[in-house]
Image (cartoon, rainbow, N blue to C red; front, side):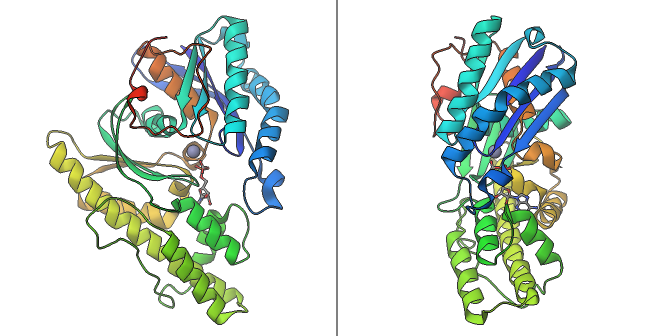
Length: 351
Ligand code: KG4
Ligand code: ZN
């Protein structure tokens, strides 16, 4: 079957067509993403109203391109899937309402996709990974460990108690005068920095829990920068190196603990860890996770960066997985700003 997926929950306007065969294997037929970097550049962060307006302007054309690229007419898809939350509500409404209109006009089933579930299932599209597995989701809005038992079956084991990891990268970049989004710039700077110069704190690291906290670290970075201002290029690089080393250690230690819990709670399952979200593109963090995986005989899957950041293919795929299990939604389904993965409403249901 072929599914159209629509993603508009943050600052990417995206649509894709994904195919799923009878054996449950997926294939991306087309995948169009328009990032709104220019719209928000002047503001140092995503402005929700501007994001929603850009989705209104571009979504129709992007859906058309997804169909053209796939060489099909929209009427040939078997279902329409769209992110229905969590996210910036104006943008979510644009995508979900468009999906409802298409579903009604084309007489196709609608699947209202949880954006976090779409991230969680992407490694099944890219690598055919079987349940159960552990997901580390590290993006601009989320930092979580989630046990994925099946479609609609999630247990959140840890989350951030303040900033998300990508958000911490972005805020550090901003206070150092780097570009937007900050993560890639901080990583580039860190490459030529002296990692030994600044020893930043590792909040919560000694506590026996799977939660994250990054706001104290961010404050420590700000104080260090203020203490030596004005900053030279080398200062900026050294601070980035110190910051990236701190978050890399935090993520690696936490991943080790989460995998220990996985082995304890699921003794009969082979340990598997997937990483999702924009921060999964970070090579230092990826390298540290590879070491943790090797030391614990864990299968590690980090999908390609373009499928870790927000995109329509992951939404289409989540829709395909749900449709294959008979889970569809009515046209009355609501858009949601907040929608935790581990609530009862995530279970498979028929409309
Ligand atoms: O998943 P994503 O595209 O959007 C959502 O937040 O849902 O993630 C974007 C986040 C931004 O905070 C960005 O700075 C961060 O991912 N990011 C990175 C890297 N590439 C993107 N953080 C660290 N290192 C990177 N190479
Ligand atoms: Zn996302």
